[in-house]
Amino acid sequence: MSEKLRGRTVFITGASRGIGREIALRAARDGANIVIAAKSAEPHPKLPGTIHSVAEEVEVAGGQALPVQLDVRDDAMIATAMERAAKQFGGIDVVVNNAGAIRLDPVEKIEMKRFDLVFQINTRAVLAVTKAALPYLAKSDHAHVLSLSPPINLDPKWLGSYIPYTTTKYAMTLLSLGMAEEFRDRQIGVNTLWPRTTIATAAVEFEVGAEYIARSRTPAIMAEAAHAILVSVPAEMTGRTFLDEEILRERGETNFDQYLNDPACTKPMMDLYVDDRSEGTGIRNEHA
Image 1 (cartoon, rainbow, N blue to C red):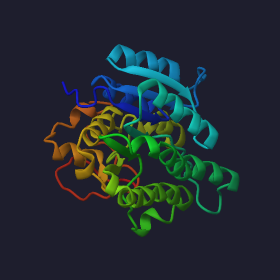
Image 2: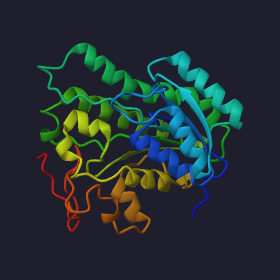
Image 3: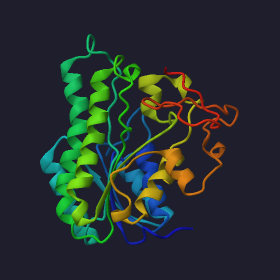
Image 4: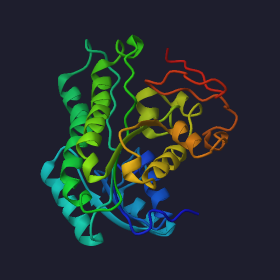
């Protein structure tokens, strides 16, 4: 089992459930220090997981945990969270911008207050969290920033349906590509990661529909893909926009059936913004 993140401090937003939680547990198995930064400090009646429950899981998995309640829209809370993490663990090596909000409404229907919320949690938070972490990352010899956003796909079919949400996700990627260049001389790796298929999370269930859960992969595939990026040499791994399956194939992985949420469903549904660019994956794009 890899221990390449042993002793590294990994700051993950939105880590109380779903993909963020899975990334935390994967890094914990290396022996990493995990900062579980999320809003959920108390149990939610419909959504499992809190920063405290994930902290317990992290420690069982072999990592050190620091649960921190954080609203990524609040700059003061972000700064305090970074200070606490650096004080407890002696620095920050990795930032994973996982917190996200989704609302698949077209321009005609979306409420501006909802767009403001989605923009703040998606786009603005990547800038705010990364900026606050930068002084600590600059002192690390293994600094990575990873944001969960898609490769920018300007095919009109992705632009006409829910462009308010799409702009916030593409802006995350554009920010990441720009920061990769800005931070290149400091040897801070900045990349993005996005699932090729839908992932079985509460966000998918509540926003897209429960029927998609059986046709999705588990969050474990995103955790393994994130781990593959975060253990690489930052100066050699920067400025890229990965799909989970892509980076795992680069690392020699070929068995993706192990990530099926329902083993009976062998053709999971492709995620938003992903076109079927490779044959033989057993995946079909039904969003088109």
